[in-house]
Image (cartoon, rainbow, N blue to C red; front, side):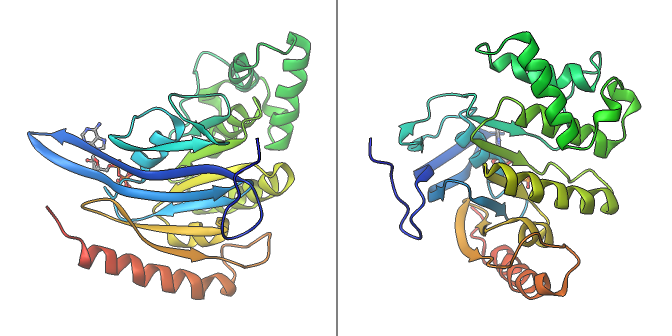
Length: 267
Ligand SMILES: Nc1ncnc2c1ncn2[C@@H]1O[C@H](COP(=O)(O)OP(=O)(O)OP(=O)(O)O)[C@@H](O)[C@H]1O
């Protein structure tokens, strides 16, 4: 099949989100979490979703993952309609959700259960490779309670990367970490993304984080959740979150973010 092309460049479209809407009934009120969202994500793009609390970022990520069904519209991954979770689209959450009874290696091996095509020997080699990639080879046999918050997120990242998904969906993965640990992870995730060229959809509240990581930043507005604005971030990589180059973009997006709160049509 001829790959679907995006309009903005010549890369094939990895994800197409077509007119997706989703409502929830909460305390007898209807919440319009997403209203008619359409978005195309080219292969290899690092896309950041930003917006105020409750604007539907996580709901959109869950719909892309196939964990939540939209009320209307659909998501296509490689041109095929997403009807449920798949090993090509893996999610990494804010809390690492590691298995506390397994060590770092065991947790990464667990992720590789998604690859029954591999022998146990191959899985072990892959787990070693990804633990090294995230800088944790020396902590291979450390148990979860022995790891810092940043190390746990590194293990979670290795676990998500090891089955080699084409799309990585990240829901505020660094939000619970201290600033220094986060800065290190910004470099690491950029390095890993530049080497692997995965398609990444990354949800964040943090404007500088979005500018540091994203090729594009999608600003969402709440009530109902809609795409308010799209920002291209053409800065060279790797980017340093503390560099002054980022500041202009961050300022512009922060101002627009403030505008989405003031302009939200609360229902
Ligand atoms: N399972 C659910 N049942 C009822 N309401 C829900 C459910 N999931 C999400 N919502 C509501 O839908 C809206 C969007 O939620 P969502 O978690 O997607 O927003 P968000 O932008 O990710 O928020 P945050 O930044 O605070 O994580 C919110 O009003 C939320 O309360």
